[in-house]
Image (tube, rainbow, N blue to C red; front, side, top):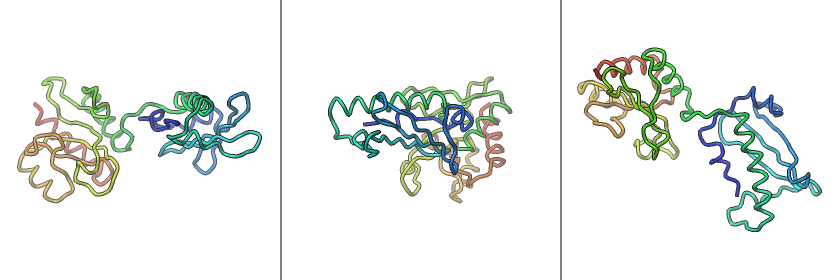
Amino acid sequence: MLDIPGIFQNKALIPEQALEFGFVEENETYIRTSKILNGQFYLTIRLRNSGLPDARVFDAESGEEYVLIHLAEAAGAFVGMVAEACERELQEVAAHCFETRVFQSRQAQEIIAYAQTRYGDSPEFLWKKFPNNAVFRRADTGKWYGAILTASHAKLGLAGDGTAEILDLRAAPEDVARLTAGGKYLPGYHMNKKHWITVCLDGRISLEEICARMEKSYILAK
């Protein structure tokens, strides 16, 4: 079975590189078809700016889709050979048309850029078991003033399935109580809830407001 989520984990599409690699744009989708296994099959890959790529294999003679590579219960040497050929192609696409980007949301990227510009700090990835979690810390004190994380909606107390990218920030206790009471901010995730707040990086709070809160968090980390 093809492991498309594994191949494209933490990958962000670079459209210009996809076009250079032979993809053709159609309605904000990038499509490329290539032959595999000496022309016995052809592989069509569709890329989008968000979501996982779509890969479909077709028998070159009959034109029918070869769906066995997508079935976990499918077995046999030939199925494995076709799957391996597809994975090689997808690995090439991942290497040439994508860049590694742990945090995918626009606000996460903006916060990272702000910390680099304002404080000269880059996110530090401290935990091998949690590769999608990082911290910002002051260079002079070594104290954290922010943590950028990926957490499930369930753990955050939010409705629906899936995950969210969040930012933990320090705040004065009186501000924590006031900010979290309105529901706009969440209690500090995996932090002391008297001294930390959590921001969902989904646009519900403006970048300007988040940066102002980060500035206060930076000061509190003296």
